[in-house]
Length: 223
Image (cartoon, rainbow, N blue to C red; front, side):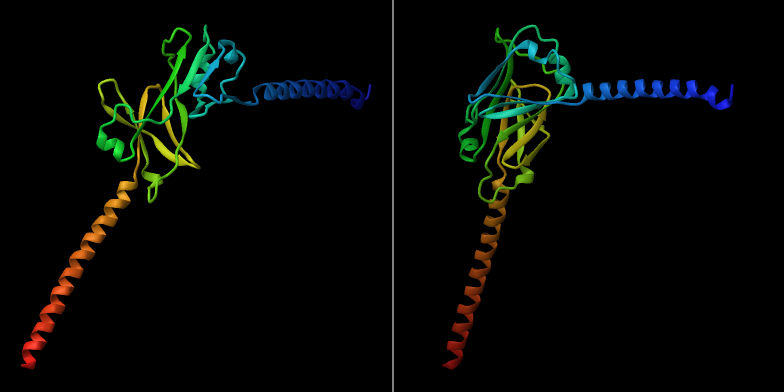
């Protein structure tokens, strides 16, 4: 038997093995391909069945949206929610002034309550971080890069959350839900403007005094 004849079955076996491996890799790749999933509600709350998360992959992009805000789940949160045994309700309240001082309310501070609870009203642990998006319209002369969100603890302690502004939304990360305070930043501009006006007014008064003194001196010199 020639060498070519001997190599033929070996080559065929190699080609078949490579094909099988390729199909397996493609199938595995397709199965692991992340899905973009969004649950939305026209109200301030959204009820989600526990089995919704059972077949989801931890690398899926899952966004839960209500009329007052939304959140994107991290892989750890998805993994944690896969173990749910009861339905949950995601809720984002409308911006309000609950718990704020009159001064804070006048300055434009707002609070938002965010929760994820089971049907018995018990808070559901997230098990990881979520990215929260709250609709927010910047005020006149407000600094978008200085906008901040603070977590309000039960004892009133405030904790800064990683925050940024993104296309009409104040965005921050948290690993637990509670009450949050949105702190506006327009005052930074207002302070600069007021200081500038104050300095300008002082300079104008000094200039006026100098002009009056000069006119008086000139008048005395004429006589």
